[in-house]
Length: 382
Ligand SMILES: [Zn+2]
Image (cartoon, rainbow, N blue to C red; front, side, top):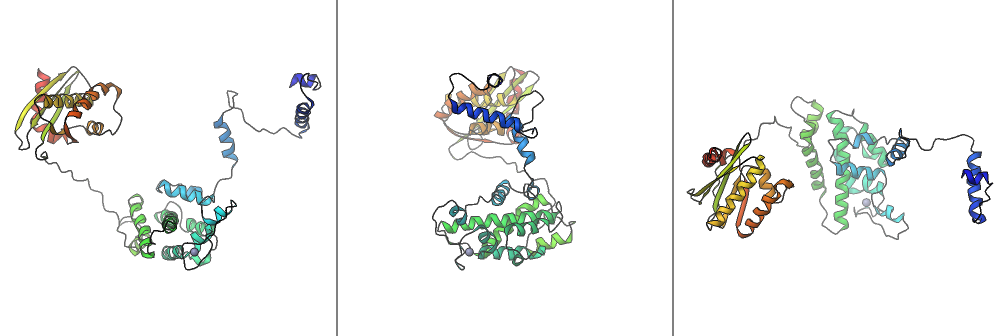
């Protein structure tokens, strides 16, 4: 550009049109009244997409609804659906018509025979009205006072201070109502039998019930929210007790043998043992192996491999395997990624499994350890 300016844009080989264009660009740049920073430099002097995003992000006005509906306690699908609503991207009939697509529109609420606009579907339709009229009055909100969707939602979001339990519900409930309306609308569009108003209301109540463990409404909570939940027959959360774990000896299915493995490791030494029993609990064969070192899962994997190999050797085909490690049991069922360092053992396990009829499950160590801890300790001492 500098050279072109020095030559007064007499660039040999270029036709006139682009030269004129370049000249106009150059001159309009000089004629600009003030320098405007269009793009900030990073400290390193480079331009990045991240920087571009930050520029745009800072310039865009903040959505006043955003900090309400992107809250942690709200399931993401509800937040995203609500965000789409605010951006006017929910494909109601009127929205599709706005793309010059000829579409005869009829709202799914049947009785009113209206065109399906966003406001009609989410504020005035018969399904919607019944939901708003059921859930809004306890918050002092009355649907008839609102025509526009945004005004109605703004009233909900601001009716109680944000952060309180009631405030959370005042954000959550309208979002749930909208979600359920959309689901019901789609069901009806696809010719499914319409759900009754009572059952749609019940679905909303179910959402409130499911969110309650996050809100933690309990006996000591304010009366207003307790009364609100009580009016919808939603019980308060109970004091959380540690879940009871039932440990019981599981017998293999008829005709199956059972392998229990248990591993022990001391410093750089690891050993694994196991027993194979018939479904009466009688030990058929026991095994133990000694490994120089390895992670627990590595040792468990090898023990599983050894146990299966032994069964194959003595002609036992139908086996229920119980392992200590839920991770190892998961790997057998292709859940989770097997570390590459263990892949060679797992390749062998898969080969063995092809010839066997296997059930693999995880059991608590206390159950598995009973008979074969002895075998594992033998592995260590050998
Ligand atoms: Zn309607």
